[in-house]
Image (cartoon, rainbow, N blue to C red; front, side, top):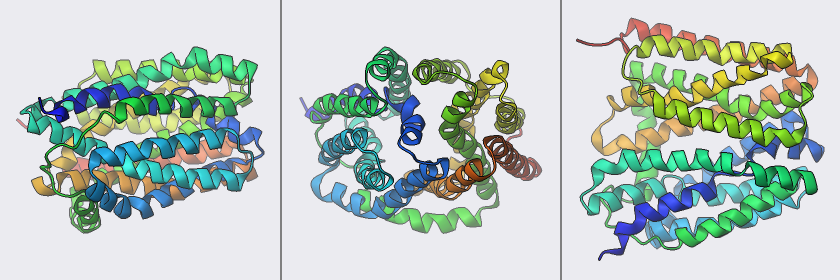
Length: 390
């Protein structure tokens, strides 16, 4: 029996351990507790994004030379070291060092795990199962966030916020047992280095396509709304007087909500109408947060609706403009553009929250994301992008 046929199973088992299931709710409070401003919190995320972008091509070369399975295996111990080190650190520059190391680990697995899964399924004649397996991986990651709540509460109550990061590092070490069962599969989509290198050439192709440009802008606007909202949620809860120990419970509830949304709604009809709803929610949630009224705290579930449902229809439309041989590259390019947007917008929003007020940051972020999304949707409507064709 070819051992690569077990790769899908081991990637599934590995998924819950790499999802930051314990520390996710406490990342921003951890930074703030150690004296960082919100601007510095977002600057750390920019450091990660820039480091990851610079590491993209070298990590692709490594995946080609040592193998995709081994690249994933190398990623695990590096990430464990960074997470555990993070939990015991207290200064901004220490955090910068760990962010760079996390970027190194992420670069060794980002896209490589997808390529290994695709090649493994194709080699055993099950390429049609890729979407199903991928959805199961995401479902396990969301579920892990909910299951990690009791452990997170105990660690925060009896220890300190940093112990949640250490715990996720140790969980990842356990997950590496499954990652180390992965083996190389026959390759069908070329070298990893070539795939990542062609992303830079694909950028020109994307920029020349009018519909693709507006689809990309729409995706960036909506994804930025939820990304920035994640990092601003903790100070928002703090303003409302919610104890830090409850942050993980709220995150678990939201994770289960997103899992249900993803399972329940297929996004096959009324896509244009739904996109206008998502664009509205992107801003309205921030405006509700700006009021800092406790009874409006559940408005954040609107961002979960956006996060869970907006990307699939946009990705499907973008894929209509992609040549088959560049499909993986072009989809990676969308992530690259989004990460660049996060790198620029994050520190600006954080600085506004620090120097003006948290409410002002909410209002400015919400209006910017919503208006940008509405602008893109207006242009896409003129192109009849999301209109149902009979």
